Image (cartoon, rainbow, N blue to C red; front, side, top):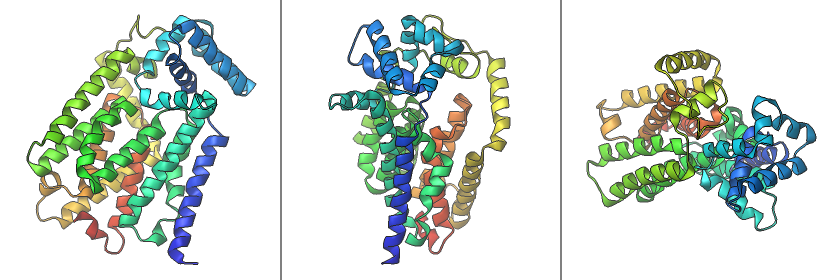
Length: 372
């Protein structure tokens, strides 16, 4: 058997393993409750009906012990017993319509909405790994590729495959954005607004990539204006139409205490509370292996690119593909953490993965060609 083919088969094998883990061992996290509710809300306008169908389906399809854990406690029980509490919780989730509409569509073909969420997360994790394979082949010899899915799985792909959240879909969107940046630049600009429909925080990445595009080309094209305008419009509409409660409420709900009525009683974040939370979370970064590896690989690679370039400012003003990936990834992770100081790998697995691919490429034979 051709050795290159063997490495490719191993890559596909490990990628399928990640997919199967998501299907057979889903985490059934709290988000599953509210994304299921969001999915049903596309089919029914009566919130009481949405509430009863959501919990009826969960009770039918989840293990009894898991259903009981999702419907008990200070947070689970009020949502289970009070449809008004449940309705307001949906405001945190409804802006990700590109995600929960997929299970809604699959339900028309007889697939359970719960199973559809498992399939969606696992499938987009698999597609993301296959897209990473196409990118990796551009820069890394086959002999280094076969075990990359094990690395990717360890830094978060297994997690996003198991979670009923939009993170695997967002991961696919980010990797596709970088892939089109390399192969189809005009399509790349048109894709950036769509990222915001996958997860609202990806507007950070869209703006960073637009800024790098402008610095590199020094001109404003129609596609650039279209992309920028639609990024703003989509972000605003996804926030307004979904009734999203806003940053301070999400921050308070996540880091302080659960807010049962985020729309009618939004949370408040004082400067003192923000600073203390950020400091506490920053201290915890030393134990985050994936983040530590990301920082090391990113800053080492940028330093290497600087060393090999004739002009320091060219990394920003005339960035190569590698420079654009490293710079946008670093800025995205830092800005995301500044706004929402949680370094959960599910938010960043796409950035970690593609950064590691380019880091490996830069330090193997002929790796310097990547910066051209």
